[in-house]
Length: 234
Image (cartoon, rainbow, N blue to C red):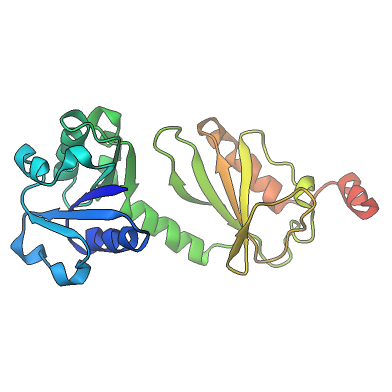
């Protein structure tokens, strides 16, 4: 996969290193000579140019890119680049960094953005995830479907502990997509038994935002006695 990254700061370079380690071809573009730290990501192609200029994108072979990542620290630049990449060069996938959460509403397909990544929102989610047990934490929202991924860590003395996955009745707008236990993710089977410390990754549809209180209740409330008897019988 060929990836063009605009913005060779710490974020852009980190993305480039990860992609290169996975065998992808990466070109880094930045208009600041001070950002040309070529030795830090020597396996990438580097270009000193303004990514908002069509001639620079031509020189970077944007028309051959599978993905363009607008990773600069300026939301205006990221929007202009996204629009150029999509409309002038027909890039199949455009990922744009959102620096100011107040600007998130602009990062949509009207500006050529397929996926928006809000750094402050991700950091907030990671902080919440690090300190929250027993509460739903929104990790991110999928751009196209507006569905969201939530994390829930099973705390001590939780009614979820020792329950079968099949006995946890989530709202119809929510799906348990994976469980992480001892740093190992796995797809949960209905007969798997949940444990204290398990991290549940739950996808909630855009229509399910109104069900979050119900989802929190399901995850934190003991099942009815009839359900308990069924579990005992199993």
